[in-house]
Image 1 (cartoon, protein in one colour):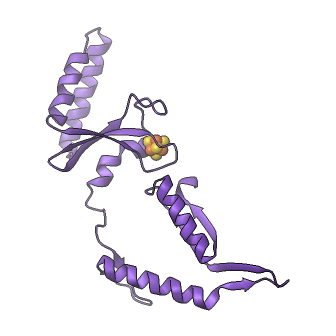
Image 2 (cartoon, rainbow, N blue to C red):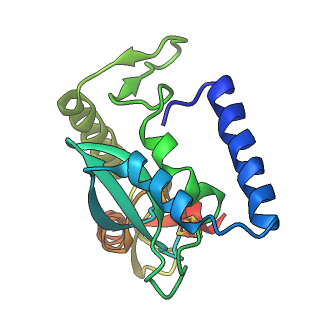
Image 3 (cartoon, rainbow, N blue to C red):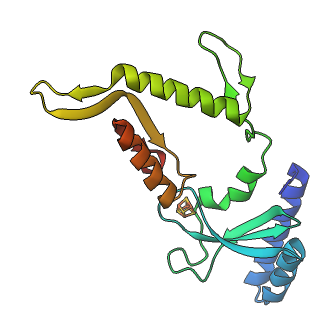
Length: 188
Ligand code: SF4
């Protein structure tokens, strides 16, 4: 949601007013339900999972005309019972954000400039670099002559934007290359 400072102050002002009325004993449930209905009117509800950590809170995503307009915690899911932490609560603004990169960027060695590249170029480049590094540096046997097939010069850092199944596939792919150094952002 785009919210100007002025809009934010109006909203928070309204929130304070509502809180005061609530404290005075007025029943605000109907007003709150009406305000929510305006925001998500005509939107389709899609149950999804917060991608940011392994707690995997359920969320309701409101999508209208193919556009994500709002997210909230799913009150029916027993793990989070409608609650979200700050990361999960900010999901809509992370999805619609002018800082969000939508295309790969590449900085050549010794360059100080980022160039926009398409995905085909980037994936080919990554595949070639990984293959040449592995061919050059794979350790097939240890000092005792035992087969180890270790690639110690590549490190993999997982992202909490990947779900469990994607993480399992990435882990298997890294192991098949011989990568032994791995960690995951959601653990940090
Ligand atoms: S980041 Fe927060 S909202 Fe998302 S799954 Fe983890 S605890 Fe839940």
